[in-house]
Image (cartoon, rainbow, N blue to C red; front, side):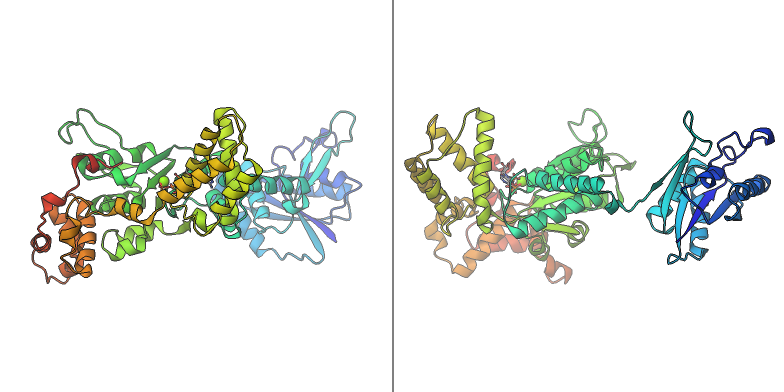
Length: 536
Ligand SMILES: Nc1ncnc2c1ncn2[C@@H]1O[C@H](COP(=O)(O)OP(=O)(O)OP(=O)(O)O)[C@@H](O)[C@H]1O
Ligand SMILES: [Mg+2]
């Protein structure tokens, strides 16, 4: 293989007055003064006005290495410190160069030229536009020959075992970090986390995390942020916003900020959360609960990175990465008219669904261990199951009867209860049996549904039974929508979206009132009590 070096003429370092030419270390010439390294050809790139120096260097090279060929290429840079210009012309050079990799191996000399030119050579080599390695020359140290030293750098990292091993370790650390240090055994979950790790490191695009309550969405969002931060991918803050609590003017002001006197009570100007998130990450928790107006404004902020604080006619800018979490089926919400299709499209790029605990039975054991360790750390005492107790608990926890409705939240609470009751002793089979009954009770379907039935307290079971199941179900969903709306017109808009577009329903609010009246209900009576209203 012939060695071919690409070098930029060093207008300072390669120059030396006649009398001391052979006493000075000159990087480009020095490359030809090593007996153990023969260069067959030099492609010397010269910036226009230095042609004379280039000829001098070429003739000196012929003196020390007569068998080497030197080709001089003039590239007239206006400004050798202009990245765009230098990169562009070096790229053109590489693209028009007839590389013959079967017979020649190429080296880009990094020691001469402006720093900008050196960076460009590095980038072109790394991107394989220049299909070779880098060579670096350095001046002689005391008692060394004038040739100095050279070293060859191969950017193909796979050749550097120790670096490759470090990268691998770093990536494994990232995975373990995202998994909270829990040795999960579920194959799909591990794949999911592997992909999330890659996306977290390489992408700035929105991430949407779906999954049932307690499956770890909030925790994962925080860990993605922490991982990005540890890899210097992000510098700003992590701002968590619970969308379920955002309604009306105050919500807009909380998000987007406001001017002084923007509304009654706005005594001074305030930056909103989205401004604080500049350069950082916004976690939009429970995004499915966001009202339609807020969705519209948020969409603009996410898309254009600009928005107008309340009461201001000046736009402000803030650039942040979005992570959203929800346990709702957002596609379904779009069809129901409660979620904007364009907002979903915007955040639905990297979408991950975290499985519930029931879907990962093989992970229950490592998670029990993790919860015990967590308790030990916070309480400073050791937690242990008796062998029999552990067996019984694990058998129950992984059985189809264990629904783990609250997922990790249930598991954390369960271990905490048992550890507390055991005191300084081991967790006994009796404690486990009691805990199993308690969990079973908490997952009873009736009590669970009851919590979420919006008709409880509005209409008695006997009255409801007067209606067909068909009507009951319609009423239940209608009340659910109404309770999430600010006004009857807002509810009307959501419920009769399709008719509105077809202009077949002149008055939504009227239509809604009539429907409620059939059940002896009206708008006021179905609104949640004040305590329940201040959600979150
Ligand atoms: N992989 C995990 N292993 C063990 N515990 C976890 C794991 N992920 C989360 N947890 C714990 O479970 C609890 C619930 O997690 P988190 O709040 O992230 O759930 P969520 O999906 O955001 O729930 P919600 O939808 O109700 O907001 C937290 O206490 C968290 O520390
Ligand atoms: Mg959450």
